[in-house]
Length: 126
Image (cartoon, rainbow, N blue to C red; front, side, top):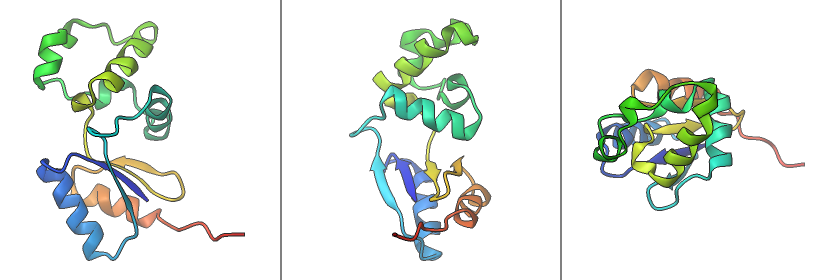
């Protein structure tokens, strides 16, 4: 299991506490220090079944500076949104958890963290 976090975010800290309480094995990715690539974002969006604007923190200062509110939310603009999230990772909603089976959630509530835990069956080595 991997969790993308901002350590200053209370939702991220809560998700980590719940994972720890459940004895989950996970890897932390501090995505502000190690931003996801556009390919990684596309993969996460596919697993989430969401569009980039669905995981964008539109109230961040960078969103205002970029005037994201005026950007079209259309397939033609999808790449622009993804490239912007990769370039400005503060805009990415958090925390994002990917379980071993590929299930991915935006874990802003205890219930979504539990959903990831239910899908976290480690792969056995061959």
